[in-house]
Length: 288
Image (cartoon, rainbow, N blue to C red):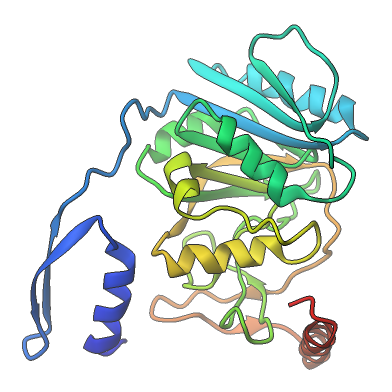
């Protein structure tokens, strides 16, 4: 499936400072690692969560609904941080962080501000269109606390997938071959839609949102690229789900599952042509 040299290169990126290489034998194709750093930070617990919501000030009622749904999850310890424009609140579980550029689409800075203020190691970042379902916290407990970045099921009211687990399908600097993956699949060019993240604060300390990018400028694609370069591995949690009340990207093609490599993408030649043209137009305009 992969040469030993390529495996060695990928493995070194993956482990970073988490493990030391104790043996590397190309002839026998053996690598031995020894764990050198604990995975979980102090006081990291699956029962402690920060929920961060970015607000442009236009959908206060939807944010109120998000807060009520979060309360109904029965999480032992949690907080909600709203960054942007909201309203003054006496709810001790809600921390409102006013952001003066709330109407400028500077969502990268808003998300970084949430992580700066996050009390807990486990963090959920979401736009105001994402609603956690009743299975959300129970599903997180079932998955477990050992993760770096997670996605989960994100569906609309018709049970259509809305950006929950897909790949760029190509090197991030080339034209995209975007497609959904089977929930049991994985690809090195995983791209998590920017509306919803589950991650560790310690991961954010390694890789933050690029504040030179604004909404609709590919800030989520850039984040995925930066994760990969730092050996951070996004994974999928099939036990938790969320509802999205809107989705602007339409239908996305699917990749067939192949246990050895990225499978075949079910897509028309017309779609490929449009996808490629769109990429190069954006490149000419300096948007990618």
